[in-house]
Length: 527
Ligand SMILES: [Zn+2]
Image (cartoon, rainbow, N blue to C red; front, side, top):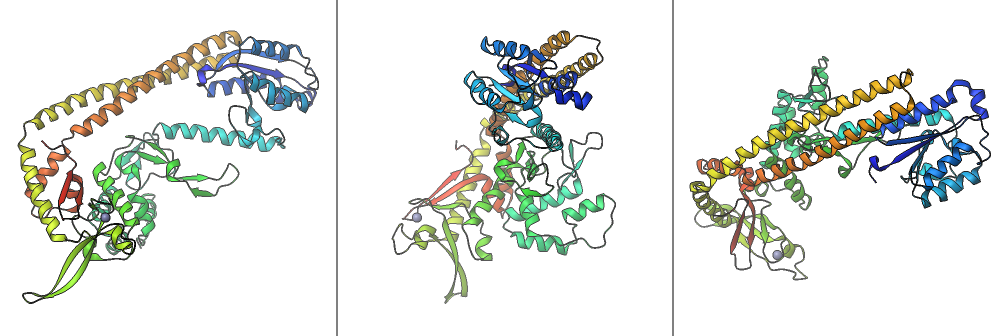
């Protein structure tokens, strides 16, 4: 169910304990807390039910009975109280309502200060576990609130951390926005470049350390004005994390670490699938192809063991597959002595699956000389590129993307306008809420205006969702027509020694069959 589908009744009750506690448990305080909750959660507020000064030990109460009636005639489908003891102190009666009556009648029940919400399977819902100290609850309440509002900020692509990720700096006018820190961004670009051109993470660390390039933490300290004489040693973990961080292609990744809970300050690494990633929310430092290529190298490295610098740097490494079993073709260097040239190193490929399980005969050797594949692929690629570049069709593709760009801009504009509108409405709600607190308007008036505003906000959010969808559709279309490949092809034609990254951005994969036939799959459409 969506939040706006919840029709809320709040139940307020004053008990004898409250009288002893004085102001803190008063009806108006309970009301404020619950109205706040409704507001924070964008719920529809329908009515309030009050039992003032009645003992909580009996469920025969006027306000309570009226509330149950409204549940029955579907006027409300959600009940909120300050804590569980508001509903009743008799655990058996209480349990009957929370565990049976509400669920059976489709009523959601929330006890704000006890963290109980029948819609969520929180352990707090277990009626055997009662929250003990008020203090504890209070701290927990604050902590949950803080976290959930940070979470929304993160979802919206606002940066909320204390320090910007390496390569970025916080905008001084808006600390939730990240700008490029050119000095560090250069290092990030260099690291990606080295990596996709076959330099190992170990080697990258060596190079950066030798050149006295400050490590990310040193860089941070220097920016904070602490001048250290030494620049630090680059750790493989640092480079590894950096190469996997999608923030660099514009998709801000947050929640990479999390606190265990509100009581502990300890942070643990969050699993990658739990990161909050907001796409296209920061200025990219690295292009998508380079990033994907780096991720593919990580994947292919997983299956390799041992080190061989010659085969590590092969132009086609990771792109060649066995046609019969789909496993990779592994390349190994063999030293050979020939009459003509003396000792030479030749590189041969074999199906990895066959090589690992020679006994089981799961595949055949697929032996092939590496240089043969490379020559064929490069020649073929050059031919393809010449054909491709001459095609007129490209022109229309360019025009197409230009049109799409214009449309994209106008949609972005509309989204900003909707956000601004919502902000204005929220301010209006705040004003109205203050009027209510100061007694300028009645609860009834507040309720009416508040609900009207919330409906407007929900309406705007729906519009925004649609626009975002269109925007991502355009993005996908644009990628298809992207002129990126033409640039790559031009680059390729000019170059005598194409780089690994260039090849990988044009070639999807190369398949070798038993008879040494070579199939090349391109990333661009063949015409
Ligand atoms: Zn095979």
